[in-house]
Length: 68
Image 1 (cartoon, rainbow, N blue to C red):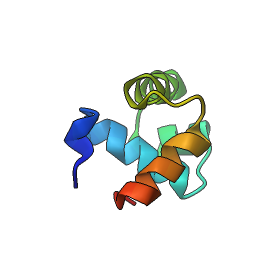
Image 2: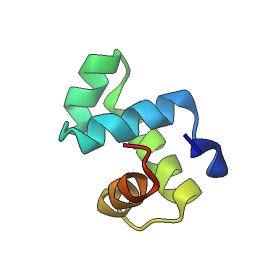
Image 3: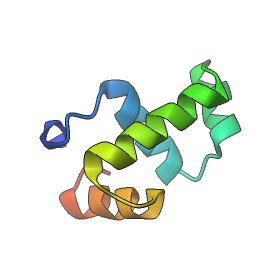
Image 4: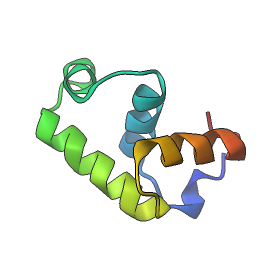
């Protein structure tokens, strides 16, 4: 996996996978034992690092690149 191109942390990649699986912020927070605010911060960082406007773009790119 070439995730390092965007320097996603293991936790950020975990968040991306949960988003791709259709989980909402509160669900992700509960599953990963973190605050919903932390999930939102990770999501914001993922969007910034991948230079995408929304999570649909992130997921599409991850699928195209073979990360998901």
